[in-house]
Image (cartoon, rainbow, N blue to C red; front, side):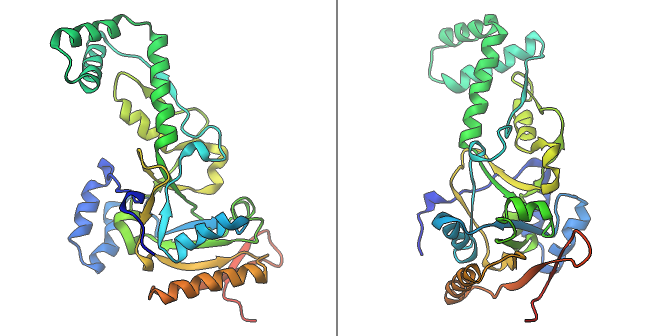
Length: 301
């Protein structure tokens, strides 16, 4: 099925991953397998997981996107179940020189064609404005980022009881396994979330985008069980990332999966097969007979 190019996002590579991405592009497949170890980046786990359910046609369409169309949706944080997504502690700690540089930059960006005298006056107005007004303006910028940014979330553990319960539709859903190395230019951008008690800090005057970066990748430690990796992209909410079909390696069925949901996946896999995409392995989650654990294996009957 054809889709318009405007639906798809192009990722901007973070500074700390640029050298790795550049080397990846000129490496052989064998060399690529060694890059993660060479760079020693703990966030670059081998596999990434997406827990999904079947409630409603939207859920099935979402599965079709991932299984058949090989595309993953970037969603706005404002739609997430955590109301503290992208919350931040705003600071204006700075010297007068730093404020002057920052406000001069802002005026140049927002009024590039204004006469020089007008720009000087605008900078002067910003320099004398109360901090409370700057905080309000900063919050408005952050709110726009919260609504316009695209985020793609992955889980880190296919055996998590809580993830199966919360995101795998009470163990009646599925968990899709993606192998990062199969499409590193896209999946290599998924990095670990940091979990902590306090909001991350963002200084409106100094290194503001650094604070935004921390905001994109910080959550309360109560969510630590998710072991989340996420891809973040400013201004790309509700767009898609196209991934190589062979990046999807397996589908794990929840221990309460119904026959009707199995048939839905069978149908999607047939659609995928009709497009010539690689075969996807099927695994099943089972309850451990004597421990609070999930066991993943092939079903023998």
